[in-house]
Length: 431
Image (cartoon, rainbow, N blue to C red; front, side, top):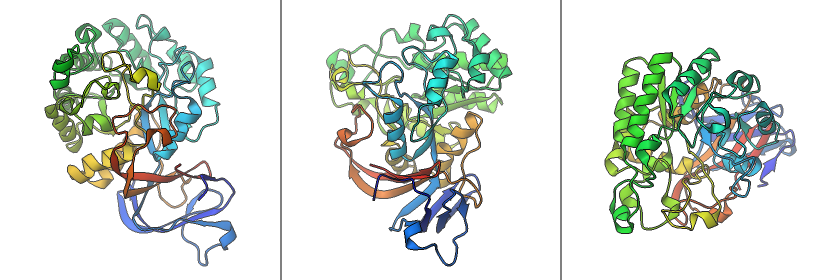
């Protein structure tokens, strides 16, 4: 099949598992999309062959398009690693139709002009850009949050750096609350991290790598919860990695505070004890937790303490990642492996209900940034992902749409993938 089919044809999927968390739908059925891009009852008779695309193969699952609230597309300024087009292509290959880009670009996304650039670049998925909490991401003074919200910012974050000064974070959160916007935080206290790059584990000791203590995250989460309690602003903790943080989130939510947190597929699947050696492709921020942390993250998702998946897709040029664990930049790519890894860990291994898995990739991420999630209901605009959850494949990073190849899953056998998305009237098959 061609990579895209943009001519106005109807799309017919005669048999698939239909998972729609917006209406608790989990059944086998057919799906029909009109040439105008609406989900509709299957007509009888079907349209003629020359005006119909049929997708018919065993083992398909159809869900509303996935939403990732944490991606780095490096545009503007670092487009050797990724750009808006390549990043959105990687997202579509992974089954995503909506993403939230992070503002740690060069220059930082702290102006309406940069938001306008992102929003007006043609891309394969819908981008809802975040904007900086502080001017220049320097952590010293609030950015012009009102102007940024008016220009289309979906939320505020200085991702890549914590807003470490309590008075600055409190000011940001008061203004964000007035705008009805969530503040997302890269919850790592730099004064506790102190240059650490890895949790205490065999590889850290073998290579003498500086330790990144769990307390750097735990105390940052504690600080963010305190600011949430003080201001009433919704706060979202990015890429949670350790058991102590999970417990703090659990307590905050029991208190009724508007605190949420996300977990990445790599923090769910991998642990510090699994790191094979001096390999920069295993360096991420926050670092992989211990196996006990990984277990706590999984349990937090299952009991509803943690309510979102997000990839923290963070591409870097190959040459930088080849510098070894101590010198490589933090981060890995994750959009094109997200379905396989999260389904394997949470559904197959941990018995998460498929509808809950879908809710954490679709309903909750959209609602976090104030969007209505897409649905499979008749009459809705078609925005779907077609998944083959039993397909086995080998990850060859150079064959991905992403410009970068930094992943610990290179050459690994995975199970489950996205076959296609339908969005904005276009059926796009993963490449």
